[in-house]
Amino acid sequence: MLDVFTEIIRGLATTAKHMFKPPVTIRYPDVKRQPRYRFKGRHHLRRYENGLEKCIGCSLCAAACPADAIFVEASENTDEERFSPGERYASTYEINMLRCIFCGYCEDACPTQAIQLGNDYELSFYDRASAIYTKKMLIDAPLEGMDSTPRETEPGVFTKSIPEMENPR
Image (cartoon, rainbow, N blue to C red; front, side):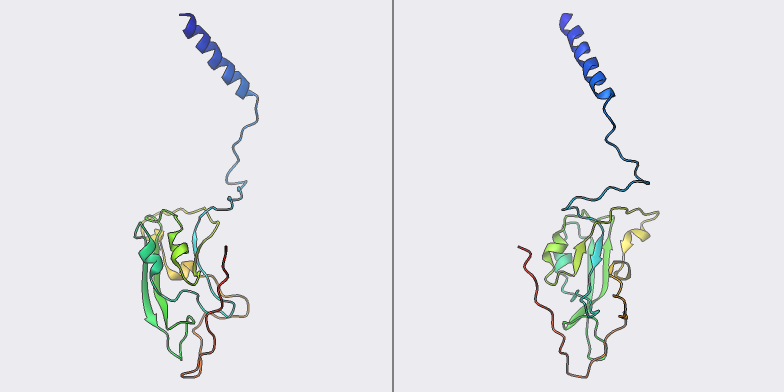
């Protein structure tokens, strides 16, 4: 009986000790916490400085996705309409955010670093259809002074190659 009484006193002491400490919660809608360094949030499709899309439609991100959340359909670039520096580009790029587990494997598998997980964490959906992010929703807006229309080049001549990749290690 004495053991039960001492355990009750220890529990009340723990409660009293924490009663006067300030709370560790934040007022979420008013105050937004900065995500940690390695946080994996909403996906973004990146562009090169010249406005071309980095995605070349190789579907390696879709193959690496363990949740099968990514769908990529590739089309051929032509000299009249060029979307990416390679032979192909992703004409359809969709991510089902309900299936995505934010593991980052798509980011690791991409040879051109086209898909990147950003710091956006406010993802909410009212229906299942709005949870499918299309290429238009994912791709970065062109930089100021650039247009998002396909590039025109002289037939058979394309001098804008894929820039050298930086090794992050």
